Image (cartoon, rainbow, N blue to C red):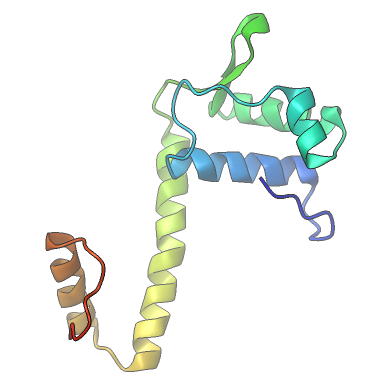
Length: 131
């Protein structure tokens, strides 16, 4: 997790956004224990109250759940938030892909054909692959 103290976004929200992104991307899985508040605060060199606030926000959103004194865990329930976040991430990437394709003069039909090919063979691009 990376905190940018000068980007204008409150630190607790940076934590919230990054945890949501990691859950949506599958880097944090349901049932996985989150770092204790004090440990994460020490790692990020921030006030523990900031981490506690982020965890409260994540709990209210259903992303994490507190288990009494056992700690905070990624929620086991399928959160619609996680799906929305995944779709938001993919939307950004699709938008970037469409802009790049337009810039390179690739037609939408050629782009769709490339996607079909990549779906059937999701390996690394080979030299000489053409649209």
